Length: 205
Image 1 (cartoon, rainbow, N blue to C red):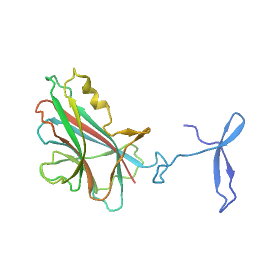
Image 2 (cartoon, rainbow, N blue to C red):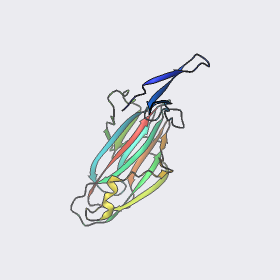
Image 3 (cartoon, one colour):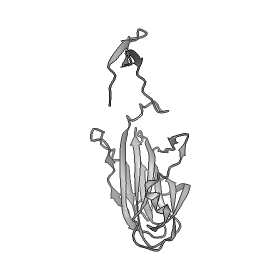
C-alpha cells in the first residue's frame, strides 16, 4: 500500500502535521475514514471463530459468541452458516440468529477465536465462543431465521458463501455485544440429516 510522501504543518493548537501525497505534480491532503465510534477504519482488532460441522438436530446450538467483559465491546460483522454438502436428499432447514443474555453451559464445546493479525492484542478471556450448549444461553430475543435446503445440488447450498448479516447502504449491519450479551446460531426448522458448521467475524474495542 502506498504511504503519504509528505506533510504540511497546521498552526492552530500545538502545530500538528497533516499528511499529504503527490499526485500529478500537486500535493493532496490525505484523509483517513473513521467509524461512527471514532475508530479509524481497519484499526480495531479483528478475529474469526470457526465452529466445526456437527450433525443437524432439533434445537442444536451451532455457534455462540459471548462477551462477559465490563469494558470491551464486541461487534459481530459476519456470520456464515456452512452446510457440509454431504450426499443427501435435500430438506429444508432453518437457523435462528439469537441475542442471548447468559453464556451456554451444559454440553458445550469451547473453541478458540483466532486473530487476523498476529500483532493484535490477545483476545480477552471474558470473550468466549462455544457450540453445542444444551443449558444456559438464555434467550433475549430472536433477530431472524435463515432458511435453506442442505443439498449440494440445490442452488441455496451456496448459503455458506453468504454473510447472514444484512447490508444497508453498502454497510454491513453489526450486532453489538456489550457486557453479558452474546449472539447464537441455533437450528430451528428440524432436519436430522447432513452436517452444518458456522463462521463468525468480529472486532473488539
